[in-house]
Length: 342
Image (cartoon, rainbow, N blue to C red; front, top):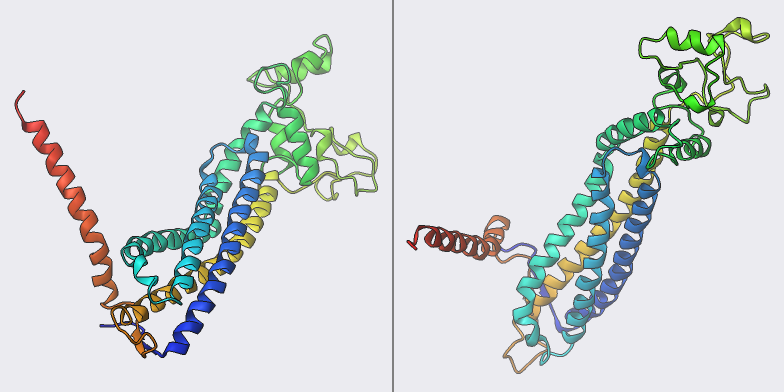
């Protein structure tokens, strides 16, 4: 079954070739933009890699950069082919090149669509990565003298101030860890001794948060210690008071920031995908309409163009069969080598 069969008079073929040339260069610019967006997202993710447990999320920017570069090559050749289509004597030179070209182009175009889907679907992976990374960041906040962790305090403080957040889930995460280093504790103080003895792990825990959790928009001077002690502060109720620290957790803040960024990029790349698909469809119609001109003295005859000569399933199998046969042959050669006696 022929798909998208259309008639192409000479004038229509010329307009198709000219339009395709312009469309391919537009798509090339869009491909460069896709690569740039991938670089921007990669840079933003690397800025916060200290609070990410793994780098699975980097598959999105890596894929965007790959398909962006591939798009430049695909559209460069599309512009060359469309230009040579205006000369019936030059176009046959591309005949042997077009089949592998379409196979590669379709692969990278589908990969572009997958990158769009991943940019919307990676929220769970991002959230899990940040959950573990922020938990470790808070745990090692005090280790300013430990090699490999000496910048953890600075990173967490800058993160909490920039994103106006506190803790992993919320400010109470700081109540569960010792975030003040032992070198800054007076162990001769009764209060310090009592706090350490009251904890089974021998840690100095308190109902306080680092200064970076303070909300500068609050009219009240920041209360960062004894947050749950109503009697320690004048006119203060912990349960009902709107605390003058940031209440939103940093995991929520970062997930919202990165998902907003990826959703915006995903929407942009989706438009690039549609543009790239238009280039491939137009090029395929131009190719099939020009095949009837080959060997004909009158190059201005009306011809027919189509997207697929066979059904979608048959066309896919036509491209896959050589690959499958090659893999099968390779496997047989390897098995034959293993069974050959020394």
